Structure formats: C-alpha cells, structure tokens
Amino acid sequence: MTAAVERILAARRAGQPFPDLEPEAPPDVAAGYAMQRAVAEAIGAVPPAGFKIGATTESMRAYLGLAHPCAGFCPAEGIQDRVGRFRFADYVRPGVECEIGLRLAHDLSHGEHSRDSVAGAVEQVFAAIEVVDNRYGDFAALGAPSLIADSVFHAGGVIGAPASGWPGLDLPAARGRLLVDGVERAAGLGAELLGHPLDALAWLAGSPLAEVFGGLRAGQVVFLGSVTPPIWLDGPGEVVVAFDLLGEVSARFV
Image (cartoon, rainbow, N blue to C red):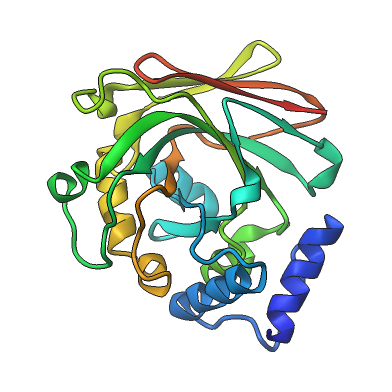
C-alpha cells in the first residue's frame, strides 16, 4: 500500500478532510483510477459491490469543474436497502443526490458499448440516494485525478425496490424529486444523464474505471448519476428521493 492510499484511508476512518497527497498526488486521470483501484484493494473491495457515476449532467460538470464524467467504486458496506440510516457526524460535509440506479444481470466487458448493447444486461432499475461527502474544500482546485482517486465524493447510498415495468420504462422521462424533511429541494429528469440513463451505463462500461476493475459484473449496483445538483445537509433529518416511474427511497441522518 502506498503512503498516499494510507493517507486517504486514514482520513476516511477519522472523518477528516481529504489529505494533501503531494508529492504522490495522481498526475492525470489514468493515475487517479489506478490509485482508486489500490484503495479498493486495500479495503478488500475487489470486485466492488457497485459503482457510481459522477458529473453525468452538464450542470454537474460545470459545478465540479470537470470536462467529462468520472466514476468511483462502491464498497458493499456502504450500500443500504430501501431505508438508509447514517450518522451525520461521520462525514465532513454530507450531501445527498437524486439518482437512478440499476442492478446488472450480466457481465459487461470493458470496451465500446452503446445504449442498445448494455440494455440487455440490466436486471433491475430503481430510485436511489447517493450519499456524498465534500471532503475536499475547494474541489475544483483539487482537480479531477485526486477526486477520482477518492471515488468522486462517494460516501454511501440507498437503493430502492425494483421498479415494475422494466424493461419498457421510459427512463429519460422519469422525473425525480429530492425532499429534505418533507420540503422539495430539487427535481430533474432522467434525460439529464448524458441524454439517456443507459448512455451513462454505456459510458461506464467503456471508461477507465471499468478498465482498471476488469469490466462490470453481474449483481453489481450502478448509481447512474444525479438528476439534480447535490443537496448539502445542515444537520440530521429525513431525505426522500421519489421518481414517478421508479418509486421512492429514503434515508435518515441522525
């Protein structure tokens, strides 16, 4: 394990901000994904339980100062089912995202894929909450390689019940709402995710992340991206993500 990986993991365990990795900070995106793989190996998360895609919307890329989507691995212990429970104090600056998620029925090898070529690999689709943590302060100044090394804000998630009607659901038309303590804070459509949520999955299957993890595997969960900007939480409370076509999912921060 490199010193940089040790510092990343030590900061996470202590609930502290992302550490200064110099002089071992990844110099480019490829090195960022390689370091992320090393982090996953260090905690015994290879193969991961799933993956998250970040910056799949134009607004999120602008918000994060990124020119392209990026992705991170999700360890099994961070994924909860239907109703999530998290300790607010465990995070530096916790937030939540309004996500479309899916579970794979078949492996997808790393390489060029299309919306049509990945559709048959999807077993389930569902509403999801990704828990994110701004461990970085000025994340735009930090840069994409280090964000990627740290799985791009990922801090956990909650997946909902499988939606009925899949395949056959009009995922781009799915409208998601994010509520905090009963108040709607944001809303968006599935079309925000690279034009079509399955285009986001196709991107992931051809991404550098899929390359370093040896492709995507049956049973893995994929958080396809948030249809809204992240909502940063000011304190404990109840979060609900509700999609008209996919159902809803909730998380409580205590």
